[in-house]
Length: 437
Image (tube, rainbow, N blue to C red; front, side):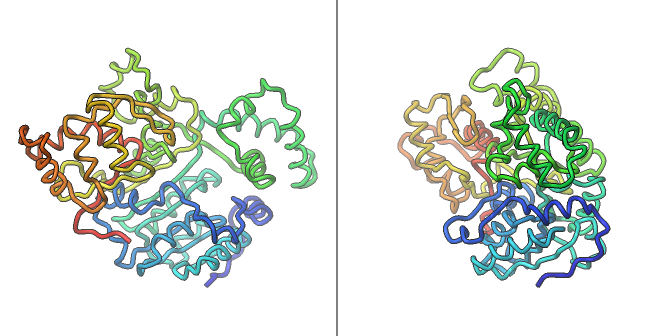
């Protein structure tokens, strides 16, 4: 079902942009050979950060993808929820983008999606009901009033629900904003979209290597990957603002009272931890940062790295929404890359002593302390056993029996390795009584 669009009261320039250049460009036929995964929308991560690991996604779970574009998040969520009674609502201002997303869903034979051609600013009056999880990636920063967009999302979010949000980050996109300003001046008299695109391509080809955009080009390759759609979205967008870490916390946490869990795509919280931003170096100044509040340390890391181009995060109404570490009824699940056997072999090679663990996806190499028993713990992590069962198996190991560690000691011993893996979102927790799709 495609709900009809109401008169265009919101962002006509943005609507026209995405009608002409749906973003990101996708070929529905490619759904036969690959599934595009969107970082925040992995159900295991949503469960861990937003529902204390106790969400089964089977009790009429409702999802809104607000500003879903050509469907990456919608398709990934719908595919994961295929065998449940969950409902996904895909909302976007561009009918052309929706048609691409619908074609992708048709190839996959997904029937759990409703389609709404509207602005997210209209949400409170659309009668769509309330949602358990709302995805809004790369949308709020294109509104005249991003806070009005956030208020509209919260108006249809259940009290127990969660937001998955991405907005642009200021410092990592410094070169983007300089190039945008340059192109605005050059395009003041450009008669149409094609002329603006032509000028942009010529500027990119002619700019000297000292140009700040070219110096940081590897951080934002959309113009190379997506052609005209990528150039326009990155450099010619009519509305585009970005946030620093302090601005983000002031907006989401201070003004709206929501709890924020940052998770940079591929890197998790590590992008906001100074000790991991500079790893494997550990300069002396890090010691002075340990006592600072987390949000101050996150601010320092953003300034230190210079490469944070977006802020991706979960926002919930409770600081207790994340799954707790230290409960034997919780199941640890390795995700986004590592396996228990691989980690155990790595620990074994280093004699269970602190060593440099390299994660190529997170682009970090950090020293980790696997503890006395870490090798045996990770060996038994299979996504089905709870910590209680894992610890019982660990205690049966010949090399461990003499220590006779209780659960509390095992949790304490494993925590440094758990904290490192959690900081790069390679481990999440769910309650043992919950079976996920």
